[in-house]
Image 1: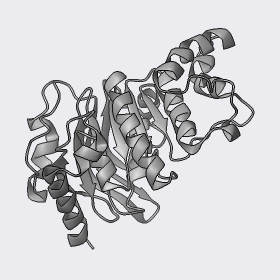
Image 2: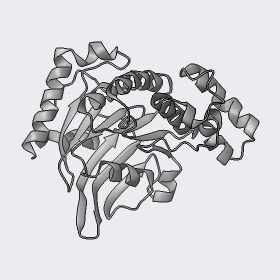
Image 3: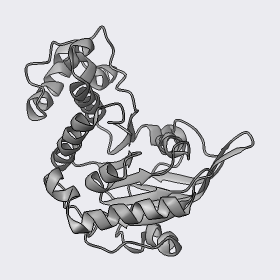
Image 4: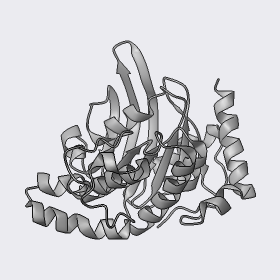
Length: 276
């Protein structure tokens, strides 16, 4: 069951109870308990508690360098947390979590010597599929997500938005139930970024997955996510949880100019300002 998007803003002092599952029925897709991490003497994360419901999109925002990308890497099993517990579905160990998560980093990392469709089809190829079978699996997504006709194009021949679409399709084709998206549109210009946000909202409505989206853009997170967690400066802790006022697939221009959306954005900015 999807979380109610009209729910009120949760004040910082209430966050811990809100993210421990009081509101989310059943088994969470992702769960973190007392999660802390450090690099040597540098503390990055401080006893984070979060849950992601199956089929939910959870946004993570916070100051630069607060540990947002580190959090995704820990969830994905790319690193082992200093302390605390992370569970993805049934998996607790990093190696097992890695098998359940598809991680899309900030840069598209397309291989320049491969065509767009072969870049998107890398996951099936890595599972042992033939080139023809992998292309056949990727081809319907090119049609569905507006890339038809660009299958043979190399990365250098694609626009920034197209490259990000191919990278996202590659992430989907990994077939994992949990998607971890790390500032996927940070490198794009403002106009293209707005277009891609609307595109991603539609894509996630069609390809239902459990998603953790890290963004430096509060507006982007509120538009794309069901809930948004605001992190403090390093070592990161959860300052507040906001419920997005924008129904998924609502046109972006309409969503971000509504009174409820503006109020949520201003609340998020105020929370971050109080933490400075």
